[in-house]
Length: 326
Ligand SMILES: N[C@@H](CCC(=O)N[C@@H](CS)C(=O)NCC(=O)O)C(=O)O
Image (cartoon, rainbow, N blue to C red):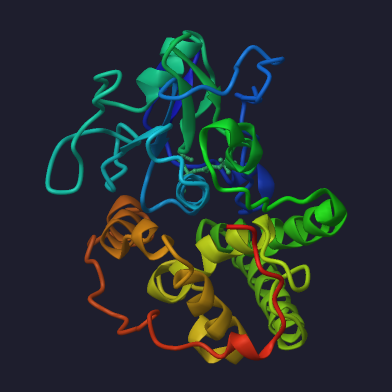
């Protein structure tokens, strides 16, 4: 784990000293947009853009789900990093989990960052949306990449589903804000905290929000009502990792998702949504977290459990849902 400073790689763990042991996530620095009309300099096109992801990473997972839901697999390629993130950060070192970077032939993800900006200073994260034509990073912010995939490439797919419909944008943005802070990033704020108070603060916010979401999902099928939206997919990628990793490795152990009837059924419904199961890889997920954070799990032993069956039937059909267009 490390970062680039003026384009030079430094192997160093997160600095939580200045923030009383609290983990504070850096803002993503590459924030360009692919648009249908190309008005931002990045027009949607077939086979021009490439996604770099980790199958372990919940943020990158969002982008893989959108690529799949919008049937953009033939339009946007994907490279998967090795799940082990050690002294060089994310790598493309080839083994039974990784086939390398077949687009830019790099060994380390940080090379893509310095190809884009030779004096880059900051963390080197996945996902990365890469423009093969201009040889540059378009965006390394998953929240924005999924919005590009949602609509900008509609000329290249027959899937008309819109997971960020205009009429629901205010509600989606509001729930995203809470879920991001307390759940998506909340599990990291628990796991990467280096002082007891910082951990407990994050832990309380996480489980207060999970309790609220459990109550909300008793009344309605999805986070903003009857329609499945971006907000659900953003929550899904954390929920699906929760019992396998966050409960133990990040000490988020008040309850498991399996202990919340509505969240557990909702998780299974989303997991069983056509195409989604294929984007979930527990081997990468468990290997990454348990082997890459040596200060949290020094032995690097990957737990063998838990036994869970996300393909088991769910009960969500008793709540009304709006059908999605194809
Ligand atoms: N805000 C970013 C966060 C991405 C992120 O932090 N990804 C993690 C993987 S789960 C990462 O690459 N971390 C490497 C590091 O922080 O050095 C997004 O949502 O795209």
